Image (cartoon, rainbow, N blue to C red; front, side):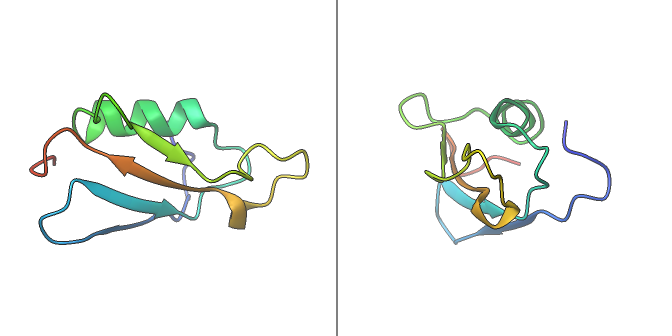
Length: 78
């Protein structure tokens, strides 16, 4: 579950099966992001799923580094 008050920016390109997501709080985990999109939006692409920015887990977490691309199985996800 994402934290209340989180300002997450989600943008979808037309006819696309992926979205770019950013603006997570420093406390948001990869597992929370994965579960949110699987449970609330739609099935993820089995091969790619969620690809997180390389700096997501750096010791000094910085929310500017918390970005991900979410790949869906179907372009008609919620």
